[in-house]
Length: 131
Length: 259
Image (cartoon, rainbow over all chains, first blue to last red; front, side):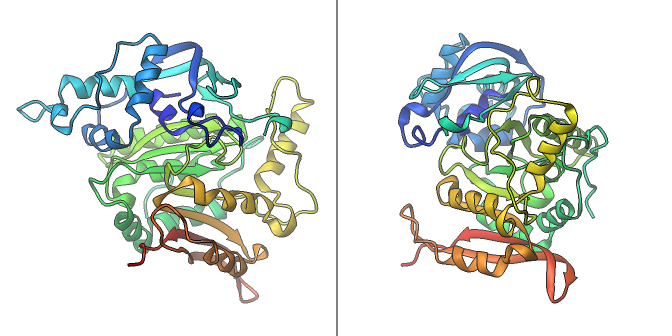
């Protein structure tokens, strides 16, 4: 699963839903893979306003990936003077779109429950006593 | 007519096969009224809309929306995400979507960005107010009983593959009382999962009493975040049967805030 997907998910338990600690989910024992995808500069630009930058900083740190800048890059930082995609945009593309969790676990920061990721697919189904 | 995504790689022993209801959803999303409505709710250059399909099955509907993003949403910077309780369906959805996007690139069409297929009970795992377009083709067939809840499903530990396939197919079709038990649960999640500009498309059959369903949605309380009232309209239908259409798609969204 792509790192960007984690921007939209929380713990699936009802009791965690309204707590800040249920987002983002924390990768554990994660095996990463790089899946090459064509760069879509317009997408990076218009997706950025809805990206939780603080959450992404936490994720990159926990996964041992290069640190992100302190603040969300401004729109003008995404293109060079000649209008071509900047290194900042390419880095974001690689991090959000191409970096994927192949196997591992995703832990809730509130209840500690761990969800499995197998063959790139995360499973958030809960046993009935935990729903 | 836009081409329908290929699903020839999908194993229909344990995944719902695209059928009349799936195709009605494709036609609805590609209809002139709905493409115009989607563009007015998420105009080009507004933040990228997140399109979530719940109960993707083969992935044919989500793959269609992703591959034809330019024609449907008027923009290629949409995000699409699929949810299913059946892990086989999550995998099939990913394959169907990636294949359709690849074909769209080959045909030089503007396609959107497919994120992932994830296994979840309806929208339980979604961050509140994150979804801009939600598509749901529910298990809508009225049945005496519902299959046991989709608990953490362990494909290796369960019984014979025949039992497993029977169970998975009942999850895809059986809707309990009036075929509405699962849909009622999904409807109850909409106010918290949809964004302010959010739209939901839900497929219903005549047995689901669609007029009654729409009536109750229009009576939902005014949301606290940004006001407006809940609206519901039937936007497409197929197969007349005794005065009632056999299948229909309703659109649910919020009006502009008053004053």
